[in-house]
Amino acid sequence: MRIAIVGLGPKGLYGLERLLANLAEAEYPFPTEIHLFNKSDSFGAGEIYNPAQPSYLKMNYVNGYINMWPEQKPKPNVPHPKSFVEWLNERKDEFPNDSEYTFSSRATVGRYLSEGFNELLENCPEHISIFKHVGDVIGIEQNEDGYSVDCKVSDDNVPLRVNAIQNLLIATGHPCINDADLVAQDTHIDFIYPVDLRLKGISSGSKVAIKGMGLTFIDAVLALTEGRGGKFVADETGDLIYTKSGMEPEVLYPFSKSGMLMIPRGNTYGKSSLAPFYFNKESVEYSETLEGKYDFEHQLLPLIEQDFTVVYYSKLFSSKGLKLEVLKDYAEVEFQIENFHEQNPDLPRFDFYSFLEGTISDGELNKSTLEFIRMSIQEAERGVEESAFAAAADAWRHLSDLFNELYSFGGLKPQSQKTFLEKYAGHLNRISYGPPIENMKKIEAIAKAGLIDFSFSQNPEISYSSKTILSNNKEEKVSVDFLVDARVPKIQLHRCAGPLYSTLLEQNLIIPYVNRLEGRLDFRPGCLAINEKGNPLDETGWANETITFTGTPTEGLTYDNDSLSRQRNDFVSDWAKDLTKKILQEEPETQLRSNSI
Ligand SMILES: Cc1cc2nc3c(=O)[nH]c(=O)nc-3n(C[C@H](O)[C@H](O)[C@H](O)COP(=O)(O)OP(=O)(O)OC[C@H]3O[C@@H](n4cnc5c(N)ncnc54)[C@H](O)[C@@H]3O)c2cc1C
Image 1 (cartoon, rainbow, N blue to C red):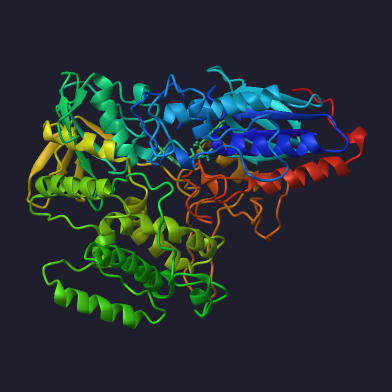
Image 2 (cartoon, rainbow, N blue to C red; image 1 turned 120 degrees about the vertical axis):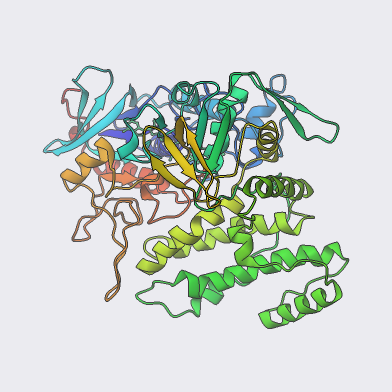
């Protein structure tokens, strides 16, 4: 049997790990070939955790959550599978201050992942041969021998072709293009990674607009400042002061639709949190669905709002030495909140929608954004156990498991899914999965040094002539030399599929997923149609079990793949188990055909 894994970032690595664990246990060790394809030689870590990237690019959650080895059977096929913290502890000389409660650089996590990858190769059973191919897979063709994979390994026009592949795992992660129309321009940087390469053309002293204000924005800012020799020093309170190197751009102008920055996070590992009380399976079961599909705004969001409110007020009550009684009848909770505000008229009320959307005054965007940064740092430093704001920001992490279950595989009505993605998903991401406090302090220090101006941050008008011009609602304009797209692209099969997915579409090996409900408008979230095992579906609903997708390409039918988590949307465990079973059922002589590579 010849198997291929396309994409060896974390999700491809997890697939390889499960496959080797299952094959190593097999009663009859049949010869098996596994071909691994990755764009770069960063096998196991991929680009996002590439060990060669600068150390100022940080994780957005603490070390305690990271473990590349699953706690499931069959056990990993290495002698001592180590969690990330165990791995760090073995290197105390190098990482003396790191623990489960601290944030590491993505490069360090990448080292952990790539060492895990190498360990898998070292312990690979003899009957399994593994081949690594560095290059861009530009096509997969189905033929009578199975599949042929074309991989562009060098700049010449002849790709490497591997034939007779019987089974494929596709784990290609994030695509690298945000806006295909603007890619060709030198003054437009469409995707920032790897930062050293992609941002090096931005000259010092230039004006730079940055589209997107999430984690990638922070990486872009750090690459253009700290990455160019700027230095931070801490003052006596622990806040940072930035000293310029002189190599930075003159000013960075971030912007997004909402103009809101993410909420920074302190350590949440090992901290107690309020379990979801209103948004739970039992209450959702009572909602009437249409063909099993929910309406997000009318059926799920009200329950989510109640849980956020309860989390917020539980902390606020306890800061006053009181206890909020969380009761089944939400009206009784509201009654307690009313009483509380009567006794504490100076305390502002919690409004879920304002919290979600964020509030900054659009009159003085720069000033109010800096105030928001300061406030959010202070609340994150108080932490989820003390701060009502930080606890509410953390609430979605605990609610999103159930939401993922309800959302996956067309669980929302088509237009409700569209509403969720356009109106809510970004905000939920913004409040819950923000950067470490240290990174937000860096943004604050860089802004105070005059290198970031938020005056155009809220949905500016953009016009393109010889230069890009941003205009805000005060009729101010700024003309910039470079426009950097600092958003993380999602798969958009109908807009720009890229070479690999285009060949799959052309052969009808995949089709775009359409969320349908009789009598309602359809919705296409951009991903491909798959079943619950990750196998692509055709128009008739037939599942092709010889191909499995995992990770970002499934986003839209699944939720929240932007994670190192092994548990969330785990397609690879079943893939490896089913495939091993299939290999064992096959006659030995049909194994490993002698087709050329
Ligand atoms: C900037 C950034 C920061 C992040 N930080 C965090 C974080 O702190 N914590 C967290 O949990 N998550 C974070 N994420 C989310 C991230 O998506 C996941 O953690 C994880 O990287 C997903 O793994 P993956 O294997 O699905 O995708 P990727 O990591 O994107 O890996 C995909 C791999 O496939 C390869 N590939 C793609 N196409 C081809 C092709 N055609 N041919 C050959 N190879 C191909 C790529 O080279 C890459 O190695 C971050 C994401 C980004 C973009």
